[in-house]
Length: 89
Image (cartoon, rainbow, N blue to C red; front, top):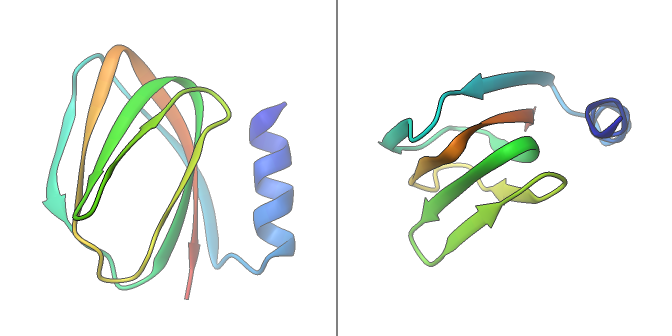
């Protein structure tokens, strides 16, 4: 299962936390930032992350790395989304 592989890989890489979450169709996240590095993996559905310099569209198996302090927003696709994410200090 993709989530188990992601969790194992991120734990080996030293993630300080690993979690999974889901959103319904067309949900959105307003622009924000985090003080830690974040690696996200799309498990089901789709989501688009809007970063300052690019948009990253994720479908199952796709990943994005968001560096500390990087402002980003996101828009969930029409089927909803389920993602796993890891945080690094």
